[in-house]
Length: 124
Image (cartoon, rainbow, N blue to C red; front, side, top):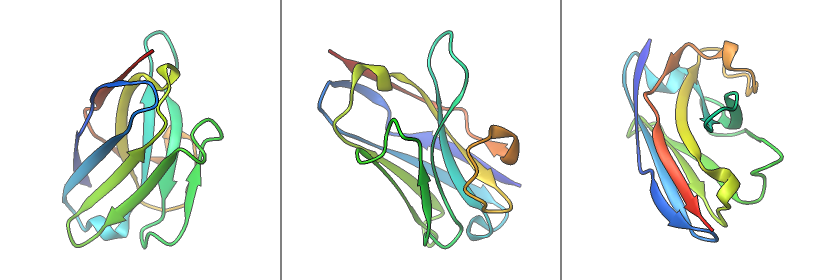
């Protein structure tokens, strides 16, 4: 399995932008689809976005569609989440995860490896 480490979180004002990164090590990163999830205090983990192993297809939660963009660079073993027009309700711990079947599914049960997460806080 791959090991994942997220970075890029922080505090930003509403309307601002952040780019999260997820660096992978271990087994061949390019074999995995990748997903981003988030969890706010007192809430369940929520799907944000997913990308297939080649980067040729993506899937987004309705709540972030048009504002967030997932991408990957297999040469750098890294997946990104560009977040624009941030809202206070985007505040959460964001985690990346690896999907060995690359099916773009939103359920966390389809993902086998998880990072430790990075905090994103959006102030109003």
